[in-house]
Length: 304
Image (cartoon, rainbow, N blue to C red; front, side):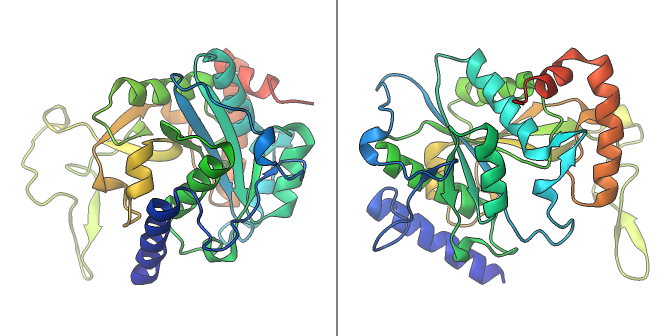
């Protein structure tokens, strides 16, 4: 399984370098506006050469197994994916100095139509069968999106940001913070969002060793939590890549690069992988919408 995933990534990176954006050796799949219209090259907005260019990717598979059709769910009265699109649009409005393109990479026609209904400017990238399996690394899908959007737009992006559909409780400031962390740190290959961990593997986490458990970190000799390093939970809400690091990655492993983190409110993020997660998140969302204006702003910005 691992060899198959690495093979996919290796082929993608090879084609990326050879064709600079053409992931299909003959005719690459067309890109579409989210309303289904083919985007001819001459209609694509040209980029100013000295302006930073950001591609925001939104990715969703049709065949989710853990929580069926989770990307199509209605969350607190509005389609789940609209929260991500709303946060992206608020960020775009807050940073007019950055040229931002947004694309949806999916093999779900229903999801594409849902996005098109209110956000027709989002470019729909139909996902090929080779990238539709549940063992395909997300990195390969990010690379696919980057290559096809650069080919269609005739540009080279500076950064690629992925916003996960199943993390609806992110604010425009969360998106802005992650982007600005990466933009201000050219030495970093990747910045992703985190929350401070409520548990520490030096103290209150153990690993299963078959007939017994052992402490999470073998060489931890701390006697107080205050002595131990700070640990974070990677919440999978926001990823911001340096373009070349993403394009040239052949392993699908994030840890191959130098990474920075952007911290988010811990009670606001729970990646939705089950119906129980979904129901709990709706309860948390109701509280945050009432008490924190920045969360309500994302909900209220969703197009009707």
